[in-house]
Length: 109
Length: 115
Image (cartoon, rainbow over all chains, first blue to last red):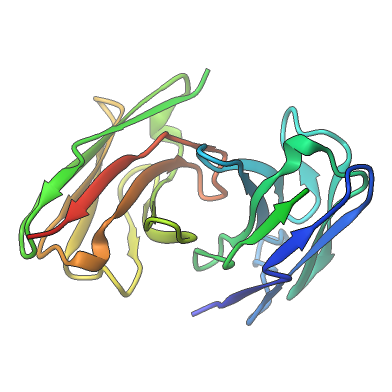
C-alpha cells in the first residue's frame, strides 16, 4: 500500500504571508502513462473537500493562482504565495495510483 | 453544473446493513470512475472504494473488503454502496466523488453505527 505523509500537521500563518505543505509518498506516483497522480484538496470548515491541484501542478478551474503545486516521484509541495482568510481549513494530498489520502494539514490564521 | 447527491444514511445497529445511493447529474456519468470516501467525526478523509466507469473493476480499502460492495447503474446515473456487517468504526460521513482524480464531491450522507 502507498502511504502518504503530510507535514506539518498544523500551520498558523499571518495573512499575506506564504505557506507550504509537504506530502511524501512511500512509492513513486509516476504512472506508466507518464503522468504523476498527486492531487491537493482543501476542506473548508463545514464543507466538502474541493480540488485545488491535480497531477502535481495543474490548478483546477477557478482556483486562485496564489496556489501552486510542485514535486516529482515521491516528494510534493503545495505552496500558497500569500495566505488569505478564506484559505483556512484542512489540506489533503491524495494519490490516485492505489488511492489513499495524507493525514491532512490544518491551516489557521 | 456537476451535482452529486448522496442518500441512504442513518442509524444502524452493529452487524446491520445499509445501502447508500449517489445521484449524479451535470456530466456524462458513464464516462467517469467514481469513489466513496468517508470521514469519521473530527477525523481525516479515508478512501473506501472505487469503481471504473463501466463497472468492470472495483477496488476496496482493506478496512471494508468483504463487507462493502460498490456498484453503479449508468442508465440511472446512480452510484451505490452496499454496506454489510457494519461496525462502530464505520460511523462516518460518506461522500461520493467523481473521477479517479477526484474532481467533485457530494455533500455526504451520515452513517451512524450504534446500539
